[in-house]
Length: 286
Image (tube, rainbow, N blue to C red; front, side, top):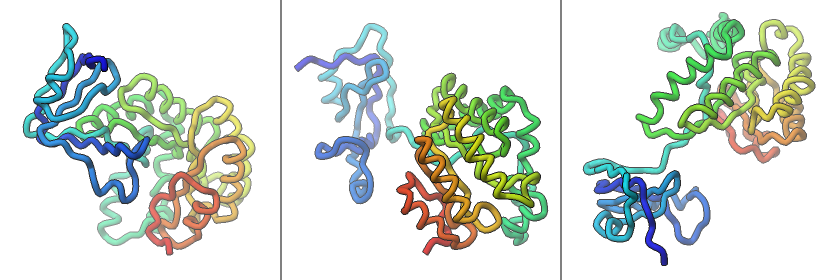
């Protein structure tokens, strides 16, 4: 057996969380997560971008050969874990909704705030006015902070443009950030995040725009892995959600749903029916 070569050693970790399961290929899930396979006083050996060995520090240091310019990090009194994955983020946006926190504290509901002009729609205009580079800069500031919290991969949603041009602008910003930043961004098309003001009186026309214009163009430019829909009273009905999901599925996108966040609208059932990758929120599912 060849001796592993390492260009980076992280040693003396109080706990090394490996999530290793010799009986399973791929990540742990479900009940298997009750055992995190922790190595006390652990170490990790890395060569380039590949982990070549893990184990108790004293043993591992005897098992690897360091390259000439190898870096050694002492993680004493620290925990080393796999990178955290944040599966629901909106990192590329403009404007802000800080004032809504005060309204929520005083008892105003999500829908009351939205009906008064707040919520998602309140930042759509700012996103539409922003350039792609402005969105990238805003997103980069957020991404730059994420490693300090242990996050290395995020799902990045669009959903604040609500026109073909502006949804693509958001997704292009996400794509370029993924190419340029250490954080991995997995893109989700969320054109069905809200009914834009110009379609409030004819929401079915907006559903048609999503299905006949947005999704084909997003897929043609390879800008998304997933398609998400906000299935909720006052937003997209189960019938409209079904139409969008069927279209996205036909174009090869994987599916996600904002389901039953504010009321029980059957979003969870739709997620199961379409074998969606995730159903987010589920506050009123049941």
